[in-house]
Amino acid sequence: MNDWINSPLLKDIDPVKLELIKMAASQTSGKSGKDLAPVMLALITSANKKGIRFTAEEIQLILEILKDGKSAEEQAQIERTTNMVKSLLRKKG
Image (tube, rainbow, N blue to C red):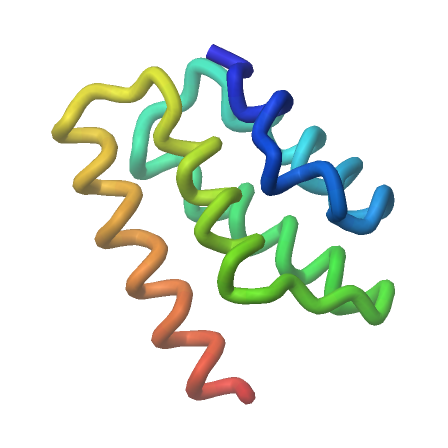
């Protein structure tokens, strides 16, 4: 758990984005797969309001963080949820 914080992918990330990711990680700690969607949407919405856009790679990293320590079933639920979120974001955009 929390090994993600040492990921080399984070070394060049915007500090504001990193803070948002850390906040989302703390809010999702101990939550099940289905409870992660509101946190993910809140993260993206909060970032968008501040003019921050996550790259596809950054979103993938966030998903890996969310899946950290979860069962295979919960990881599958996270995948389904994030696919739904991506679909909704495409429709809005």
